[in-house]
Image (cartoon, rainbow, N blue to C red; front, side, top):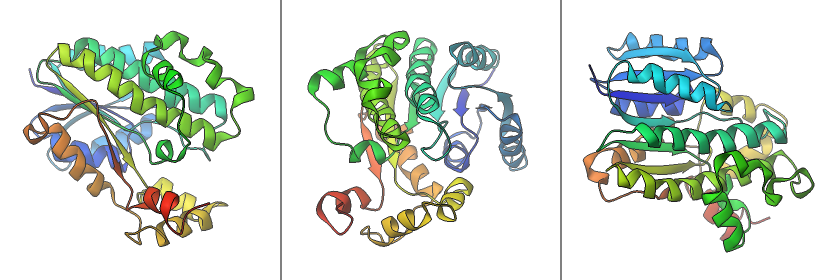
Length: 274
């Protein structure tokens, strides 16, 4: 039996974190597109890791329970890396809320029930959650604490209150951040930790599609006018995950780490200000 890492979302950021933290472990990769999971699994297995790909739909509790059950056959689940989700240009409002908001909440809840003592998780949120105007304390608490099956019924998340897919995405990412705070209390009772990372523009195949798409100028302007003057790399996100998931992060839980080259700072107080 080995310690097991569950990685959801077979992309560059998830793989970078898994390569940093997953040596010697059994790594179960779940993705809605089985071919994506198989591609990342092959890349990692060819580099000496022990990876099993499976099909998983983050918007389905049954699918999440299935990946957890498969993972448990190999040993104790000691790590979760959640890098699954859909972006504002990939999906309609309803799908963004079902996957990024509800699905992430369910995943944190279900893994939290079985995470081993000393276990640790990170979920990938987004700078987008930091751009939206502040919610009321009541709304924040609703996003943090509402039972998962009631989440999508919140007034805040009804279609008439959501402007567009970007707004839905921002709400989902704000919910991720608040949910991590609330879940960290429950994980803590088991001796485990959970944090979130909010990346800015990171160069991945998906981001390159965005750069070349209809919103490309918007993205290029964003990284040109952020203090770093460039987009980030998946490995720079993994640097933060390594701190959070290693013993050096033992006192860090329930927190969110913004890693965006200063784009959010520029959005509020610099040349990116709307």
